[in-house]
Image (cartoon, rainbow, N blue to C red; front, top):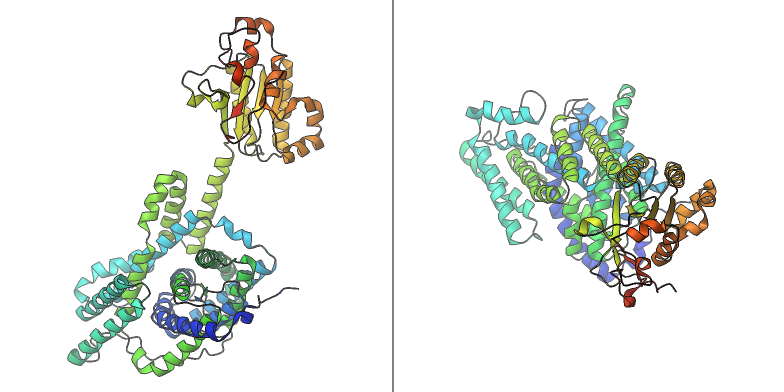
Length: 605
C-alpha cells in the first residue's frame, strides 16, 4: 500500500498560514511572466504556461515530499518539449498541443511508476556533467530561438537554432526598431531589479517596463508598431483529453522516457538543494510520486510538463514559506491575478517575452562551471562538452542519451584501471609507514618481496588490466617471488577477480614464491570462501597486522639472497645486528599511508 501524502497539513496553523500566504503571493508574481515566457518557448499559446502553474503546482505540493519546492513550467522542460515535439507537428497547432499534453501524461505515468517502485536511484545516472551540458545547450537554444522575436522579425524559415540566428542576419533590414527598444527596456529593468535584490519579482518588473514602452510606441505609431501576444481565453485551466494518434505513439514513448529522466533529475536536484538550506529530509521516491501525479492530472487540465522550479522554490523558501500550502495558495493567487489583469496581459509584447527568454538563457549558460570542470577533470569536461554540442545538432533526447552513455563509459574506464601502487617503508618515519615508491625518490625494495596496494574493484572490467600489471611486475622483477597485497582498498570482487587471484597464486607458487593479503574486506573473503580460493590460498596467508605479515613472509625468503641484500628495509633484516635502518624503538611498527590513524602494531618477539 502506497502512502501518497506525508501528512504535512498537520503542521498548518494560523502563523504558518500567514507566512505561506505571503510566500504564495510572491510565487504568483514570479510565475506570471515566467509562465507566459516558458509556454512561448515550448511552442504553445501563452495561456498554457499559466495553466501549468495551477493544477500541477497544487498536486505536486499536496503529494510531494518537500515542504518548499514549487512546481510548474520550467525553461529546460519547455525547450525540451519544443525540441522533441516540433518535428512531429507545427508548433502551436491543435495537433501539437495534443501531442504535448499526451507526452505530459506519459511522463507522469513513468514518474509515478518510478516512485511507487522505489527506483529513485535511477536518476543518479544523470551525472552533474550531463546536466551541465544539457542546461548550457538549452541556454544556447533558448537564445537562438528568442533572437528573431526580440528583433521583431517573422518566424524564420527552416528548422533548427542556426536557421533562427541566420534569419536575423539575412533579414537585418526588416528588424523592427520598436521591438528592439521593447526588448532592451525589458532586459535593462530585469537586470537592474535583479541587481538590487534577487528577492524582488525582477522578471515581472522587466515585463512591466517592456509593456510600458510598447504602449508608448503603440500610442505614437499605431497598433501595428509592436506585436503583442493577444487575449488569454480564461485563467481557469479547461479540461482536455490528451489522446494522440496511434501512429505517433512509437515516437512519443522514447521522448516521454527522456523527458521523465530530465524532469526527475531537475526535481530531485532542486529538492535536495532547497532541503540543504531548510534542513528538511527529502524522500526521493515520494517526490517522484508527487511529480508523477501532478503531470498526470495536469495533462487532463490543459497543462504541459512541469517539475520543481528553482526560480520559484528558493524564493518560496526565502519568503518564509512553512508548508506546501504556500504553493497551493500561489496557484490560487495566480488565477485571481490573471482574471483581474486579463486586459493588460493581452497587450504584452512578444519582444518583451523574447527578452525574458534571452535573460533566462544568459542565467543558464554557466561558463564558470565549465571552466571549473575543465580544471578538475578532463573526462567530466568532455562529457559536458559532448552533451552541449549534441544539444545543438541532435534531438534533445538523443543528446541526453549520448551524454549518459559517455559518462557511463568514462566511469567504466576509470574503474577498469584501478590504482596499483608499489609500496616500501618510509625511512623518514619512525613507524616505517608503507608509502608509494613514487613518493620516495631514494626508496629501496626488498629483492624477494613485492608490496602492492590496489585501490578499486577487481571486477570483470578491471581484471585484464590488473592481470597485465601483475604479469609486468613478475617479468620486471623475477626475484620478487613473494607478493603481499594491501587489499583493504580492494572494495569489490567478482568471479573474474577471483580467477585473477587464482592465476596469480599458481604462477607465484610455480616459481617457488607465494601470495599473501593484508586485511581484505569481508565481502571479498566471503566470495573467496565460496569459490574455494581461500582454502587453496590458506587462511594463514591472510593477515590483519603488517608486522605479522612481514614476519611470516620473511621466514620463507631465501637466506642467501638476504645475506647479500643491501636494502634491509624491514626490522627482520637487521635482527641481531645494526644493519637495518629501523632503530629498536620503532622496530616492527609498520603502517600504511592510507591509514594514518591506524594504531601502530606492536613489535613481534
